[in-house]
Image (cartoon, rainbow, N blue to C red):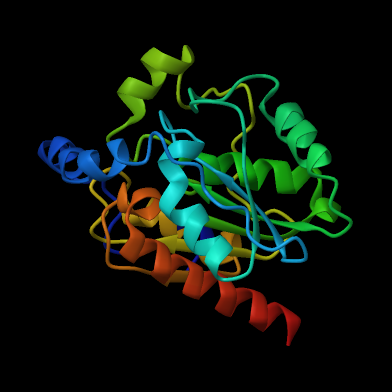
Length: 236
């Protein structure tokens, strides 16, 4: 079988009627984080940059950043407000943020949803700065319309989802890449977030909603467990 024709259950975007149910399920959790500031973790911990998903911010990823810090990582938010889609200077601004962290060793990028797509492209251009990349429900593979968000994305971002100002390349960037996905994802097609064998190094399925990747304390524990396991495999 041609690797580019690989197919499995989950190619189609989730039913549109599930969108608001998933968002509403997590709305209370999301609102409860708006006034909190996540801890940064120990100074000597492995540096991690967490990039939020579309229409989300660092405050939205509080639970995920808190759990990473609790597990000994030195955690940083992206400090760019709400993620309103790709811009022509997205990679440049990520580079400025990473340079400002002033770490002497490569960082781990954890990107939720669209944030993972940004992380992949940054790692493609700057592999020497990235120890590993972890994507959480990120639509990095397949057709960019294999999700229920693209019509809203085009209105907010101001460009067609298949013609972004930052190139969307499906081949794996030259850094270790773990793709975490869920078949319960109500927004992103599982196939798009899982990817094909040549598009990432490892894939892990979790049992959670799309919004839970960044918001749910329970999902955060599962994510951090898989992140640590992946990094240990790289170092072994």
